[in-house]
Length: 169
Image 1: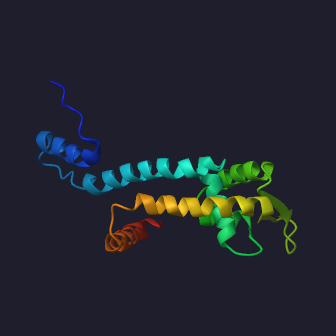
Image 2 (image 1 turned 90 degrees about the vertical axis):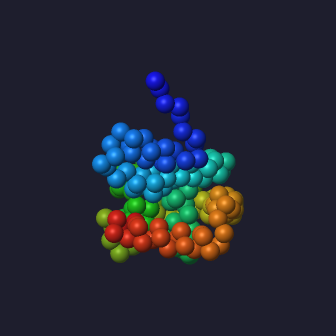
């Protein structure tokens, strides 16, 4: 007999209940946190990407433009600093920068103090785009957090920071 699918809202509890039925000796309760975090993260990404796509950007493109913009004038960083601040590999940064440079949203120039090094600069076109996209992005994030009270948001932010610290995130 095939089990029915769990309600989407509490898939994690369904998984834990299934494990309890077939392997009561295992503590599957971490799924209630890890499984939910994973599913929420995937659903949030889907919602966030809709805004990025509405501005002709991918998730990584938005991340690079936002990182450059929030550094303040003159809106420039080395590729290594971008890699550190966006937490992706050098290859991923290079692909993003190639795409953004082709679109005229960033430019690369030789560093004055080290001719072997490059500097990534947010262009006026890139700044205008991120300045249009960022308010919509933050409004979207606020919408996604509406089910939580301000106190719950603060508690969740603190708990996620505590959980992420030993993982380096």
